[in-house]
Length: 113
Ligand SMILES: [Zn+2]
Image 1 (cartoon, rainbow, N blue to C red):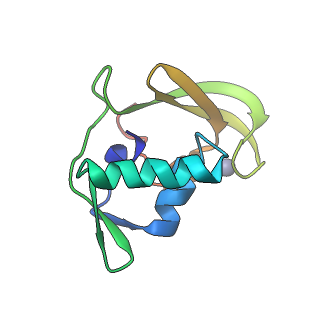
Image 2 (cartoon, protein in one colour):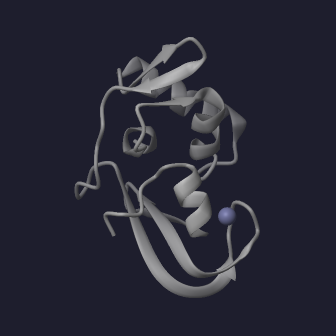
């Protein structure tokens, strides 16, 4: 669960949408993923924000891992040219590449690399 890997106490719904959009571009799936996180008690809606209640930090097989690799590509999120690529590994699928700024901006944590 992507949202359990966010390194913040709470995030806005908009930020949650941006994070989930990293791994799917289907609006229905984005809404569904956030709804499931709420149902499972991973996040709790509090006045327009989502409080992260359950945190999974890069445990193998759980949560999200961030992998770093030298590259020459474009960030999938903002289109910026990048030479250090970050990939999100969610349930054994790899998403990316993303630039460090996008990963940091969404607080997905690059310090445990
Ligand atoms: Zn980017």
